[in-house]
Length: 55
Figure (tube, rainbow, N blue to C red):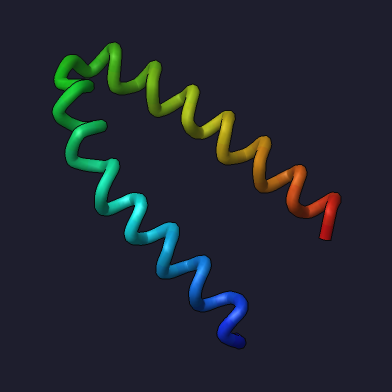
């Protein structure tokens, strides 16, 4: 695992730490939270599939 894999992983963890508290606070109702979680999971899966085809 080289530096080119560690730096993006650290960056993504830092972004998650910054975004997660506000995401949880704004989604206090479970129905809204599940809907937003579903939308974000589709976005992440789409990005992963695109990156697999590119690399």
